[in-house]
Each structure stands twice: as structure tokens, then as C-alpha cells.
Length: 339
Image (tube, rainbow, N blue to C red; front, top):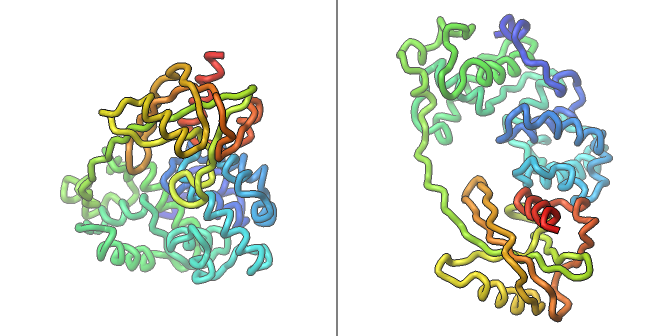
């Protein structure tokens, strides 16, 4: 593995540093996100927040704005909160002990292992999605890997660590899963472990790891209002926790497809926002797929007739300063195109 990695390992920006903070940021960004997507966000994030102190002292709104477009915003919120803990309890030094790392929001066992091995050259296993797949095929580990199977994979991952150069070995495991031992059509002939792989010997390595049953993703319809007044629009900020926590958005409500959208919208705006409006026109329907549901948002532009509203009026020219989700950013773009 080490020989293969020396010749074939990926040249990634976070591998050119031993800065524990920079490595930590990369590991959080790489959770559920592909490398090519992460790279520009990683570079931008470190330009704006070059140290733990810079991140900890910044507002959550600025952090979310910098993170905008990368998705899974709870990662950004946890990273921000954890940086404040590092600043206050560890004198702005990312901990180099396993339990201290695990105590930080957003850091699990694999992320802690990556920080310890990559930044501090300590003996610690990792078990990201790529490593799980490699080991499950190598040793034909069946069953649900989220239960007992995962404990076995952790034991195997730890047992395979060499006497030194833990960083290169862990990175090799990640790269092998990403480049060779892929979920579909693995390139077994060029794999450095092909002679040892029990999954390959079965003739069907894709059987491993066992694929869990996928639940059907629910379909949600909602309505949203772009309420305008004197070159300003009315926005709400989502609660700090939960889906898209802390982001700004146009008011929106779930709707039953059988309902009359315009009537429902007027009632919600009046009863929940304290504003009376007149609907001008439909801005169209916008679709977005999230991890747990698919959304179709029917958007209408509205003119204010009266009422102050329980939210904030934001000048159109300042919308780019606020953190917003992709679907609401697309609404803004559509609004500007029309105007």
C-alpha cells in the first residue's frame, strides 16, 4: 500500500501541510462531499479564516456565507462552535489526544484518526467510506456495516497500521477506495491488493459491502413569497439548529397539492407574518433535492399593502451578503432576470 501510494497518491492541497487546523477543515468538508467540489471551498475558507482564532472570533453568519453552496450546513455550525471550544479550552491549539478531539462537535472517530495521523503523525486508524469499502471487499465482511460489522472493520483497520508512516497508510486506504476500489466497476486488475482480496476471488466484489435498504425519499411541495417594498424584500432567518440552520430565506410553507396555492399563501402571510399583500405573479417552480426529501417550491412575487412584518426587510443590493441556500439564491437570480 505504501509503495502504491508513493507512486499513485493524489496531490491534494490539505496534504501539503501538517497544520492540524487546515487538515481538520478539509476532513469536515470531505464528509459526504467529493474532493473536486471541496477544493475551491477549502482554499476560500482558509483565506478567510486562516487560523482557529480567526474562525472562532467570526460570526456564524460569516461562516455560513463562506460555506454557502457546499451544503450540509450543520458541518459549518459544528466547526464554528468547535473552534470556539479549541480557542477557549485548548489555547487555540487543535488537540492531539483522541478523547479531546471526540469531545468537539462534528468530530467522530474517523475524523479524529485523520487529524491525529495526518497532523501529528500518531498511530490512529481511519474508517471513512472509501476505507470501509476496501476492507469489506478485502476480507468479505458482510452484514450491516453500521452495526456489528463496523466494529469489526475498526479492529481490522487498526490491526493493519504499519509500525510507522501512519499518515501515508491511511491516505493510501482513502485513495485506493476513491480511485481503484470504487463502488461500481472496481479496477481490480490494477489494484495493489488484488492477489490478497477475497472479494475479487469471489468474482463479484461489488457484493461487498452489503447495500442497505434505501427508503423512498418523500416528495414535498411548498409555496414561497417574494414580498417587495421600496427596493427591499422580506426575509426570515431559520433557527440556528436543524436543516439549513442560520440561513436566510424567503417565507415559505408546506402545502397540500389539492389546496389553492394563492389563497393558502395570502392566509399564511397575513396570519403568520402580520403583513397584508397582493400577489403580483408566479415566479415559477423551483426544485431542490436534499438528503431526506425532494422539494418543489412554487414562488410568487407580492406587493405590500400594509403591516410591518415579523422578519427583516433587506435591500435587494445587499442580498449577496447573507448566507442562503441554493434554491433561494436561484429565486434571487430569477427575480433579477425578470427585472
